[in-house]
Image (cartoon, rainbow, N blue to C red; front, side, top):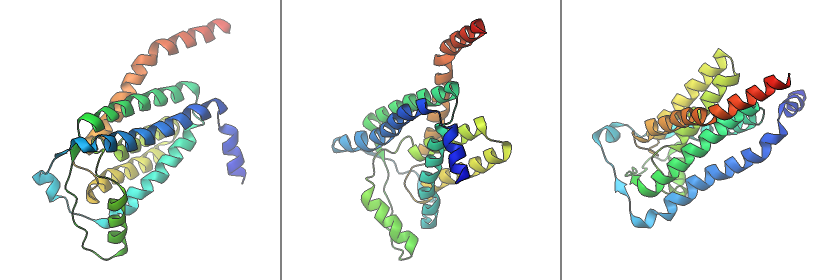
Length: 220
């Protein structure tokens, strides 16, 4: 209970509204564009390297657990200082806008395997296949979001927390391939979209941050 109270005290109230909009933007950009453009067809990518990756339904545990990682990310996001919050906020807007364009105009897809297993993981994976339309592949949102989580921990966490986050994110990367929800190219795509957007965000906000620092120094 004390931890909850302590966490609530760290929350910066001005971060709540933009973060809520960011969460809505996240799901809207993932769910709407790919499905809206599905009727225009997709390009099936079926490489020997993708076919060589085995289907391991048990990795669905990691794939689903990624949503918990995102929840922790968004909760901690609320306590970030103005400068760091703004950098991640702008970066996500950039990355997901670019991803939306890919979902609409770079419509790649893969041939999902037929689930023949009868174990609990196989059955659950078959259920996921049934409710998750095979659209919005490149870049992988699991990888993009996972890398944001790790980069965020790198800002406020210690080395141990960062390594734990990095290990889990790499497992998420692997899970997208082992449950056949993504192609190989989608993984580095998610990573690069996150990294490049963070760089662009820092570049765009550099002037604003310098003006704010100058104003603060003048007021001292």
